[in-house]
Every structure is written in C-alpha cells, then in structure tokens.
Image 1: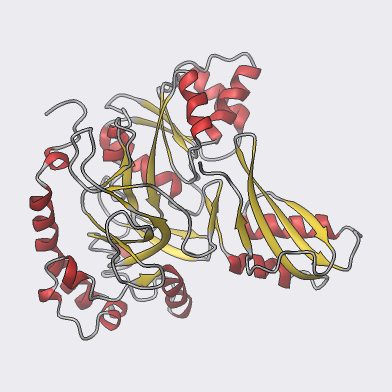
Image 2: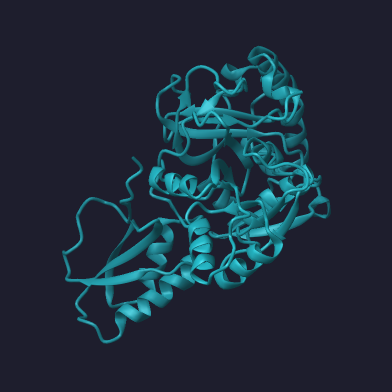
Length: 412
C-alpha cells in the first residue's frame, strides 16, 4: 500500500464498492425501523429488504434538516431518530437551531482520519485544531480523526489568537485544522509579534470556502491547504486529494444529488441538493437532505481513488448560509426582528473583507439612531454567535426580492 493510500478500499473497483454498500443497506434500514420510532414512521410502508440499489433507494422519502429540527422540537432531544439508548453515545452536542447530535461510539465516529491522511497528515504529526469545541461537534470531528490517525492534537478552539500564535512557536505543530481564513489570522498575528510560525506546512480546512486567492497566499508561504466537506450530522462526507480535482466521497457513505425540494436524483454533472445516507447504527441518517448544492464530477480522480467525486459546496438550496463555519438561518433573522419592535424587516448580506467573512444586517426602521444599531448588533451576536455590522435604512429601502440572507461572496 502506498503512503498516499489510507486503505485498500480507496482504490477498489467502483462496482465492488457499490455492491458492498447496498448489501449493507437493508440491514441498516431494518435496524433503524426496529429501534427508532421516528424512522419506523418515516419509512412506514417501505420494505427494507427490497432496497438494494440506487433506484430502490430513491423511492424512499428524504429527511430534510428542517423536518428533523421540527421533530426534535416536538420530541426532544432527538425526535425519536436515535436507534438505541442515549447511554451508548460518547457525547451529545447542541448545534444552532437548536438541533441535537449524538456522538456515536468508536475512535473515529465522523470518519475524519481518511481526509486528514489525504491532506498529508501522518502518525506523529502535532495538529493545531481551531474548530470550536463549545456545544457543537465541530472541534471533535477532526480531533477524533487525528487521534485515530496517530496524531497529537492541541485542542485550541476558536479565539485567543495571541495564545495560538504562542502555542505554534512553542509546540511547533506541523499542521492546522480549522476554517479557511482563520489560519491567515493566526499566521499574521504571530509574525506581527516576531514569532516563528514556520512549523505549519499543511492544513485541512472546512466550514467555509477556500477562495483561490487565499489558497495561493498560503502556498506562497509554504503551506499546502486541502479541504474537506463535513457536517455536524454526518461527519466528513468528501475530501480533497493531492489531485486538487473535485472532492472524493468518503467511504461508508451513499451520496445522491437530487433536484432541490424533491427526492428525485438528477443526471451526473447537474447541480442539485446533496442527499446522504450514513451507516451510523446509533444515529442513522437515511437520505438526509443537507440543503447544500453540489454536483457529481464525471470520471475518477487522477490521484487513483475510485469513489465518485463532488464539485464541492456550490451554495444552498435554501437561504441558510455558512459564515465563519457557522450556519445562519432565515429563522434567526426573524428572531432578531421580533426582538426589536422598531425594526420592520431585515436582510443579512455576507461578503468578504480582505480574506475574512464579514456580515452586515440592514434593517428597515423609522429610527435614525437612538442606539438602535448597537442594540440590534448585540442581538445579532447573541442569536448567531457571530459579530456583524448593522445598517439602518428607511422603510422600503431593502430590495423586494424575497431574500432574507444574501450571500454576496465571489466564489470564482
């Protein structure tokens, strides 16, 4: 096995992989229906034993995140979708929404080790992980993968940039894990302080777009940056390889691209909504609609891995938007408006300032100021956990286009 190969499955014949996945699927479905009342209701009328290929899988209903959120709200914490006892979960998380997620048992429950290996991480590497360890599973997803790979993790979490710069100089980590733009913040801060930041030579980023200009900037500094596509619900779904040609789907997932708002698969190459089935026996997600847009890249990766490839994240099927690794939902904007009677409506614009995500909430109001902007900004931070500017506009000043969140970042 070559050093670039995590295991032999990465290069198995596609037909063999497909056969093995769908041979396992009926057992997963039967287990979910027998042990989870919500899955039993959701899949009522379907025979698990007959779901043996993509056509029969496509006949099952999709489960949308908005529906899961409603079910959890009505029947907390998991809406009846947990296929086992809570005592089997290693941890429980609460992501914005709120939506609850259990951590399945095992050393690498989110399948992160493979993506780290593809990014060049190896046993013995020291990794600076700046994904959040607070409430959400973000920091743990690749933390667990790194430990499974034999790496040593410094669980930094978000913020405290001065401390992180000091840690890089003292620990000399070879790699970074976090959002695409925060690596630049840490490196720049360390250099401003005269610290030696040269140990970092590789990075695996997620939770936002790795813009070409930012990747070029990192490469000029001698840092090779790869991306992975992961969600709190499912783990690492796909990852970039040394070929830098699409994202290879991770093993142990069945990925479909469907027409947004439906469960109907689209042709390869057509943009649609990403729908994923995992093989997590404690918290199975079957035809789980992520709300993210992508497409299948034809052919196989030049790197030699044989699984299907995705074009990466291509936007949202809804207006839910990721900013600095955190999703912001239109419902959260409505919550902010309802908290301030002076505000008639609002629209959140997401842009780039330098190489960082930035957001501005424009609110229609008769108020000229009177401290309203500061109060709304405080609510914005409380609701979304992110800082943003607030702009007051006159009634009728916002575009009449139905957008509550406008992603104005250039992904070219």
